[in-house]
Structures are given as structure tokens and as C-alpha cells.
Length: 330
Image (cartoon, rainbow, N blue to C red; front, side):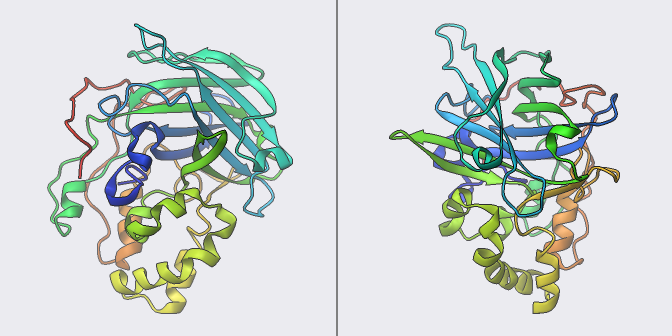
């Protein structure tokens, strides 16, 4: 998977798909220079496991603009409880900076208040305060031969996500609001309010890390952690993984892990976007991670990007007809 099912035993965090971050993207706006699109997708196989955003959760996109691996700008998305009968929800977006951005609470300027969430085919695009926002049910852009990966890299030619949906949170922001330097770092987080406190239940930036590198017993701690602590906490264990899967030397593993630890997606806006410089909706991140983990012995799963993407914001394709699942895929 990318970041889908990032809890222990390939399940959603806390067993709740509403809290399950699937992917993070950053790339330039298609039609206006000086603007960046940030997309946080959640809820794998939506709406089969959950039909709404969690009203007690804070969904967040964090931005580090000075290279210290800590948030300098944060966009927090919170949702109303579903309306009785219709299931309709509304989203409020806060932008916080400085010390407030490093706390998980949604504080700061309100960019959008009670904006509609679109659960139908057509996206709602709202513009306010120099931003664009679109939130709702969309086609999942991630692509991979997951069956082949599980079956010892015996490729099937089938894209496991070809007809899957997610809940998309898409924000188009002025570059100046993200930071003065062209290079920024971003990561997503989902926190849940429990007993009056916000508890981080999922976080990540780079695709397909926790599935390959984290043992089941550390996944909850990883999801609760801070990127600034990643290198000290995880690089030794992840070095062992690369030595086992890709015959890396310790020195080679160290250099390779510097590309993904801390788990922050770097994006130099002065250069073309393409993973690992940001991430577009068509980047073949599955092949990138297979190449990394295998030490180059497995370069691709032979699956290409989806063709249903929209040319304009929010870019995520229209949702597919729903195929109801009895349980989360294993």
C-alpha cells in the first residue's frame, strides 16, 4: 500500500477508516503561477468502511519552511457531525503559524468556515482568502499491483486501486503563505480527540514506508510520533530492513534512508514536481519504493497511473461506483 491501512496488522488506525491517511501530494497549480496544490487523502476504499469524516478528528497538513523538521505553518481541517437523514457535513479550515502550528489543536486564522463537503460525483470548489478548497469523495489516484507484491512479486497486471475511492482534502495555496524559501517540507497527520485531548493516530509523508519498514508493534508509536525524532528513533531498525531486503551495506543504507527520514516530503518549488521532489498524482511511487527496498533488483510492478484525473483543481477524478466490502482487505 502507499499509506493505506497504516495501523497494526494492515488495518486502519484504531480500526477506523475515517482516521486512515492514504496519500499526500504537493505540486504546482495547473493554471496560476506562484501557487501550490496540497492534497491529503484519507479513508481507503471509501465509503465502504466509513461514509463520513470523523467529527472528533483534526486532519492536518503541516509545512516546515526552515528545515528544522518542525511545523512552521499548519492547515487544520475539522468537520461537523453528519446531518441526520442526509449525512451532509461541513468543513472548517484553520491556518496557524509559528508555535501554534506545532500544536495539534486547530487554531489561527479561519480560511473557510462551514464549507460544504461533496459526497456526490461533482466536486465543490470554494474560493476564499486567496485559497481554493475542495473536500469530498473522489477517485483514489494511487496505483499498484498489490496482489503481485503480496505473492512474492509475481505480477498480475492488475491495479488493485483501479476502481477505489478515497475522501480527498485538496487545498490550493499561495506560495508566499507556505514560506519564503522555495524548499518546503510537508507531512500529514490525523488526530483524534479523546478525553479532551488530541491524540495523533496517523501521520506520514513518503509513500509506502510503514508497510515495508515498521514492525506491527511499533506502528501505533510511529503514527503518534514527530518527524523531528524519526532519525534517532528508526534509522537503526530500518537499516536492518534494507540490509535484509536489498543487501545494503550499513553506509549505503544510511545514505538511502536520508531520503525518507525524517518522514517529511521535501518540495523545492523552483524545480519541476515529481517524487521525491513533491509528489504529483501520476508519480510511480510503488516502483520507486520497490527499487529502494530491493536494492534495485525489483524496479517496477508494471502498473501505470490512472487516466481519470481532472485537468483543473481539485484534479482528483470523479468517484467510481461503490463496490461494498465486507471487511478491510488483508
